[in-house]
Image (cartoon, rainbow, N blue to C red; front, top):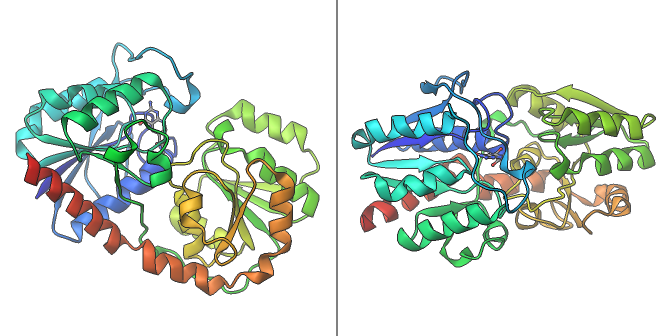
Length: 353
Ligand code: HBI
């Protein structure tokens, strides 16, 4: 089987702008290569991903869909990288058994019926706009089984929830080291952007006095500055956008990861990165983390948007056995399991076409 992976259009791979898709795409690529499936990746210029060759496509990046209103029109720049990526895919499609789309944009879905090669779509976020709900729903109906999501909770945000294939996620667990004994610090990971609710984690650090290590790409500078202005005394330290090796070294030393999503997080790769290091996860009971965290066993699910809920959960962390956090990832989120799920998904699509 030979696959063409079409990356997200909001940033080059390795920039952090693609958020969870960057890690997901890499892990799917590695998971499938281990199963002797040939992979080529198409992504915006400036992309790099370990040693995997990437076809670099120039053009203007798409605006991140989660920053837009629900009823916005479809917007593509004159020299859109998305258009250029899919023009390339159209030219080479005959060389591939299947195309796997990671972009959360209207064009790849609209183009699907015009392609001869089957296209599988991994939808990386919950419902964000009418135009995307409509076009994804049309493809879900016209090409049954080709819409993949991470969790049932994410699928439930769409009108076509029952037609979505839940694929979870996974990690190369060999990159994450179990840390049995943490220091007195907390972690927050992710794109620094309003939908991630970082201000609540900072508020919890201020109340508990436990230092908070912040890691991830500053996607919204104004948002970050506003947090720094509003919480001048909070014991927080921004460590930047780290490589997986650096990230897991910092993360493993933490008593817990705080997840404060304002939106329905499709999955929450950062949750399984923390668990893989033996770090319990405290998250709002919202979105993907609800399907990941075993409440009271590998972390705590707290009332959404409740800083007091976070503070109370932090006080009970001694109840959590850090080994059970690592064990959960070995059982549920290995790269082998991920590769197996995706290969089966592709085979079911090819069997229909
Ligand atoms: N927005 N328009 C658009 N297209 C994407 O592919 C996209 C996005 N926003 C966020 C995003 N992809 C990824 O960072 C998340 O799906 C993880």
